[in-house]
Image 1 (cartoon, rainbow, N blue to C red):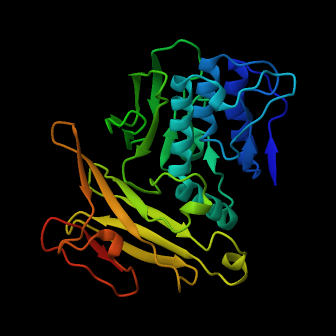
Image 2 (spheres, rainbow, N blue to C red):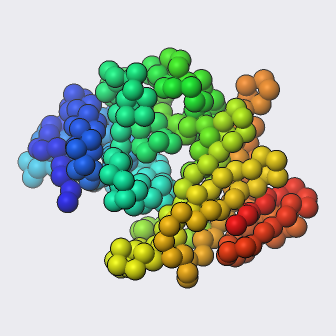
Length: 327
């Protein structure tokens, strides 16, 4: 079942409250929570509407909705500048569909929430209603006030965090507070160091058309050059994931020694499921604290990653600059 936070208003306080209301719902296992993007009553300013979309993409139940007395606010009614900001936010949501899909499966198995207050994973971080986690690997610190050019970000724990929203992939130390620049197109979110985030980056008009698309793996190494993640998918349509345990659920582990990723089956019958990996992007912190990014589209022998059939006992050895995939 899905719930919404009630008939909210087009105001900055209600934008902020939509976060902690849905965090509360998630903590009591009602994870499909959302708020009316833009507010139900009243008319949001253009800035508020754009910022609300940037928050809404990280809330499980993402929808725009308003009362019949509010002015029409379909994105195409606004200027191209406003449309481009909203479009970018929605594209970000779609790219992370594989991550959301895996979180939903994990919730059915463990009961863990989809979105989490910082204290869920970092118990000493109590009073942060403007920060939240999506799973364990993504941190969001959205813009929740009008007219700001910077936000204060608290990075929890001993982890390092890579900034994604501005495409800088800059690295920040856990346990620190930083003032970060923002503009209307950026709403800070970060990948935790030590993570492998599966995405689908090919732009499609619907998730139906994404069903056979290849994955892109984003590897953000910790300072020990380690990373791991999870990849789950099924037929996206039937209940056979439940009735027949018919799904692909693997742990992915980066091996810095061989520059490879090991796939290890966790559960399910993966027969008939063959993930295609189009691109692997590895981010690491250099000796001067700079971010070093390497993108792989082929294996060591030049085979396009997308052509690699990942099956049991398949091993690709690194011969040149390329990637190794183990099973």
